[in-house]
Length: 58
Image (cartoon, rainbow, N blue to C red; front, top):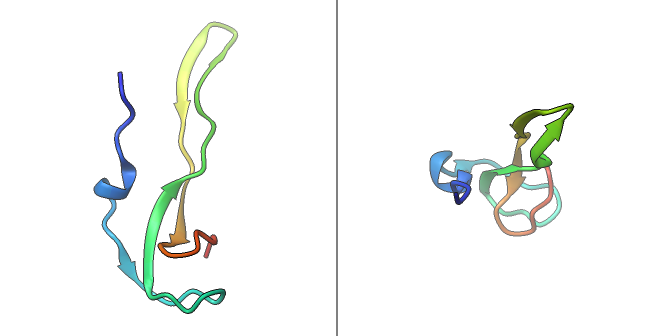
């Protein structure tokens, strides 16, 4: 089973990156992904706004 591409689900937003000056902001998943804890399975997702050019968190 393949993971969905969350950049397609959450379209880019316009903003301004302090590092490189790019104006395109995308959401990226910084979570740990699939996990199992004491037999309970799940998927951890941590969606954050990032620069589309340099990848810095905003």
